[in-house]
Image 1 (spheres, rainbow, N blue to C red):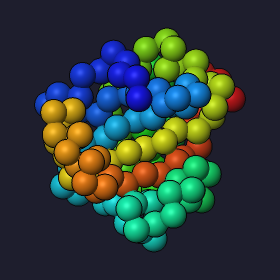
Image 2: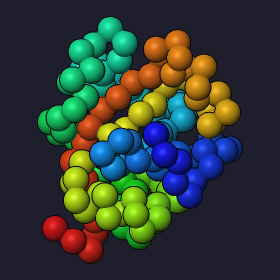
Image 3: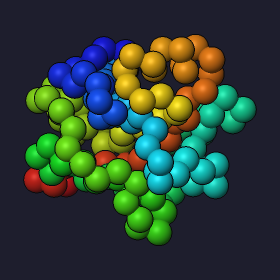
Length: 133
């Protein structure tokens, strides 16, 4: 992955671009932010191709620097500011999906060991820019 303008420090999520310029948001674990299999999260023991298609009931809107991601039923899973640059926004507009990656890490500094241990969870949600379709 290619790190964009966010650093991923202090427990804040950071945007990335996958090969093929697919937009990703890497989101550190936070108590009260559920990662439930029944919501569509794919992990090590789940077929990762499930994470490729947008999961039913999920939605996301990027309004300037504020991203709101909603779980099925409309409950906010994430609502906060991210460091999205112009390139990342363009990829959002092009792809219209966002891959969320989370797991038991708190910053970019402890992401790699968690990833290497296969302890990440992935979910794709449809996303739109607040000023666009």
